[in-house]
Image 1 (spheres, rainbow, N blue to C red):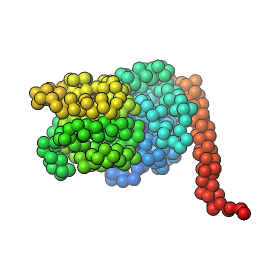
Image 2 (tube, rainbow, N blue to C red):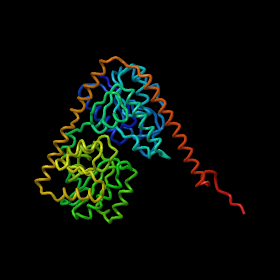
Image 3 (tube, helix red, strand yellow):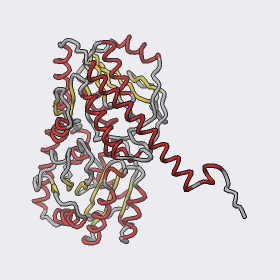
Image 4 (tube, rainbow, N blue to C red):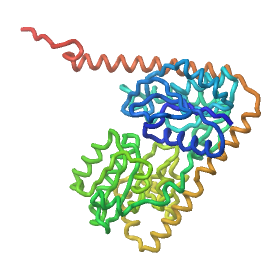
Length: 431
């Protein structure tokens, strides 16, 4: 099949959606399908990309998935004409998601949408964030989903949630698969030595974008409590982002900064090495539709301690491949880490085996085969015009634009009131 994948984020941007698009595209191509990726330009683009069309763009909001409107060039039309797509797959309901919708309507092709993100969890990147904007963002994603022929939900939790929100389009639960061979081996000992972590240390690890929606303040408090309770413990974090300083500050305030190791963003082979340097993977995010890093850690045989949340409860099995916690306190989380650290080696090996077995259930070949089966079914169906749903989606877009203008006006007015020197130049004092 000829599949067009349309996404607002892609390599070299680091994030779950970008990684998901790359993983599925690679597997589709391995199976003999053709994939054309439509994505924005980013700094540091790889050279000589094949079957990737880059759209000129301006990326904003500190590396989040949100961005200014992207202009679409004539190059895209030419590329699509040459590619002859059979399926259009959108990975966002806005910006290039709009382009995906227009491509599908104009060419009368099936449109698939993966509901990767709980978008309301990311509105804090917008100045003047408000409950109204959060509601509009939910409505936008719901109306967009109802314009599509098939929705992919990364987990059962998300499938149930979007149904409750009013998605009437067919929903298939298709998580992003994990490349088992990529993570089943790694140089954990070498990584520990490079970072100065002692051989006998018990290493609590975390991988991901270091951002507020990942609940990293809470996780840092919990890890600090654990460090104080176990003298062998060290913390290993792979990632970058705006919350990095907060993590360092919390560990420093608890007097534990000497046992914190942050590597920054890593390449594929280095990432596997980091997972193999861990004894347990710690995860506190409640904003996930699917915790991809959880299955990656488990593919490396690393048990997980995590808070119960969407995208997590489908993966973590309490005392089978880790601990799933329903109480969100740093003390409870630290206690779970301590429980695992104190287990006899036979029990730890059982958790490691349970983790590997769980990862096998999420293998990339299995999830890609499910997606292809959906594509093939859609390709045999007649094109359906959805004018009413399209009008609802456009109305929501206009409401979001209006809310944005209101918020922008409030922010500018507040700036002028509290910082008049910046708004109007130096203030003149009168006698």
